[in-house]
Length: 167
Image (cartoon, rainbow, N blue to C red; front, side):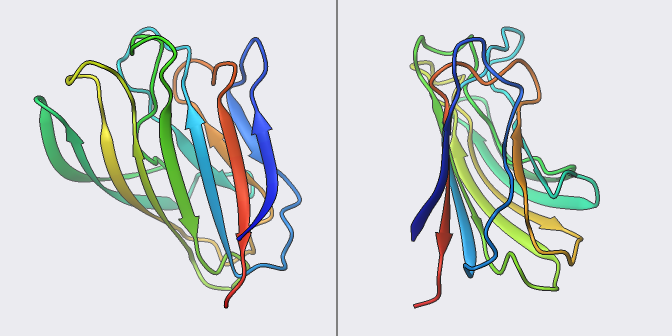
C-alpha cells in the first residue's frame, strides 16, 4: 500500500474533496478519511462518493446500526457511503470511513466496500455502517470525490488516498 495523496481541510471548510489524476499503475485503491461537517440540522451527515465526476448510475446496499435507535438494511442510489459526524455531535469528534475500490482500472463495473462510523459521546447520535456500492461504469477511475450532503467538511478533516498493488 503506497500513499498517493492526502488532503486536510483548512479554515472555512469545503463541500467536497476530490483526488484528480489518479495514477493508473496500481491494482486497487483505498481511501481513508476522518471527517466532520458543519451541518447543525442533523446528528449524522450522509457523505457521497463520485467517481470520474459523477455519482449517477450507481446503487448501494447498506447495513446500519444507530445504537438505541435502529438497525437494519436498505438499498439506495447516488453513491451514498454511510454517515459522518456533524456539528451537533460531541465537540471536536470526527467520524471515520474506509473505502476499498478493487480493480479500479478494469473495463468492468466498479465496486466499493465502505465501513464507517460517526462519532459522539451520545449513544443516539452514533451511526455505524457497512456499504457495498456498484458504479455502472467501465471507465478506469481517474478522479474520486467525497461530498458532504449537508454543511461543509470542517477544518482538520483529513482524506488520504492509497494505491495497492497485487502481491
